[in-house]
Length: 406
Image 1 (tube, one colour):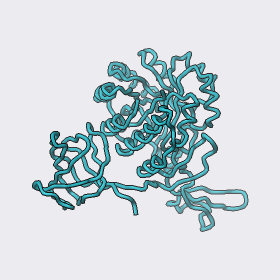
Image 2 (cartoon, one colour):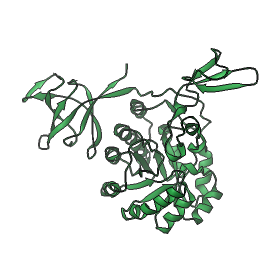
Image 3 (tube, helix red, strand yellow):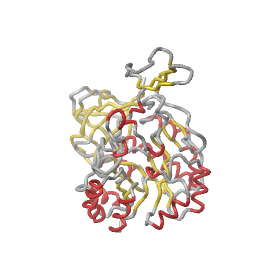
Image 4 (cartoon, helix red, strand yellow):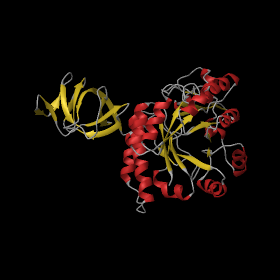
């Protein structure tokens, strides 16, 4: 059975992944992963995260996959024993030094996509070095992946959904060049996602510059402006059968910077698709694609699986957006109802998202609302209301209204 591996930036996203059907979750360890600008787990709450996963029969992998200098390695040496004692199922690493010290601590290692592994000879050597799993380069076609998995001495993992980077396996220096922020140490400011201009200066020379910067040689109106360096997102939901039949062990969802409702939606959709195939009743459902389009996306492509990606994308093409409207004050388990304090209006028929560190993230429609035990069709800012909820919630959970973009 193939593993569905989901991202988590915090406990809310972690719980959302688990409750949506993830077999395993990968998280960032503060100071040692490729998402320095988002929320990360620290060594103090790592054990709690592992326990949450193990209680629900899932695994947890910790990312330690930045470029490592001596001071980084020395720092990691101090926390690897704690990662081990927390019973983390594996670390994700890209550096051979990290591999060595992890092996010394008897910690399973999954080699990161940052290592750009693209052939079986590399996998044979990595097995000798003690690697358990390899996340293959994103630049491989499905046929090339099939050839690798047939002979692979290691478990093979691939990305199936999420953001794609213009640079090979994420080895990008654009953020360093423009902002002195090292993308390979988790500091990427994503200048590739901005608009750029391509200007033809003469018959032989072309200039590329940020559209916001007009102070470069040759700027005039004779050029093309757009998201030239921003690929569309990877989406392989239609091709689950081919991926499973290719012998891949783990399907990975990109998105450790994404909020809990993104993690919940994408995990749930891929869980349904995988279960559909493994039950012998595969049939692609357009509803899956519609759900994926509701959360953050730049449009969808199949990456290098079947061709070279050729489409660029504007920043976000999600069909739906959200507005925070209130928080849970109390929950009454006998009647499955919550008392909500509103700071924005809500009406019957609205679609809501409820999120919290233990609750995770779920979506439902408001079928009815009450104030002082009387049904009301809509509620105003500042009111306290009662709503029936399909899942248990906790005081402090945040309520969002989700609606279609106009």
